[in-house]
Image 1 (cartoon, rainbow, N blue to C red):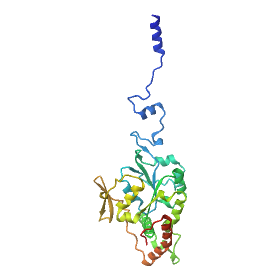
Image 2: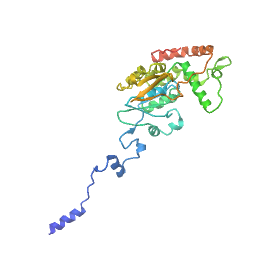
Image 3: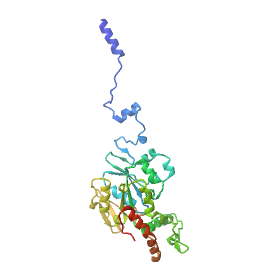
Image 4: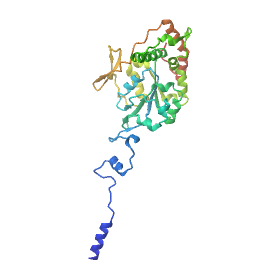
Length: 307
């Protein structure tokens, strides 16, 4: 009788064991109830197991070089997760002051095998950006898409011109920007953005050339598939993008994309006609970029079919 009473007492005071991972709860829900899982957004986690990752690749520029086209084409690859908007983390002080946690929150959710890509064309010409990117990840792979510097200047002007037109605001002619006192206006910002060797030197202070792949933007427009194949190899992606993913749209005058039977083209703001420029002024523009282009070719060890 005494033994029976003793057994009942021991049964009552024995602590109840809690299974380390209840079968009826997923692991994240269990940890959340235990109070050990931080907020999903802050951690960059999603209930389905995907997560936000800092980019392993950044398209750093150049403005009006074809960065949107490059990102859209690269997004055809199933192992690429691309940020939808230009983040401007490294070049805008307001954003940079928020820290890497904020930057992470701007990235898409992706799976562990996917490559996260961000695009902000202003990075290439912003002096502070290379060091900041290097501080985040010195091994990051960078994509730089360039086109003929003179054509890039005209595209730069065209974009700003149409932005003003849409707001019904007047905007000076391109000649008023390009010419001052009868000479080429070298203070025009659009010209400075096309001095590729100046900006490239800044990036090469922090990254070896092997970490920067230069996409020929003019060739990407004419024949995109070979250029995208080079990008796949540089990023060590399996060859998933095919020639059948591209088709020439005669109405728009440039290549569009075909993905899983769905056709899509770039926004109508892309591929706009450039303003008519006096041939003599255009020649001045070509002459101005002649020496800077040579310096850039020497810097990167390859040439481009520019004027």
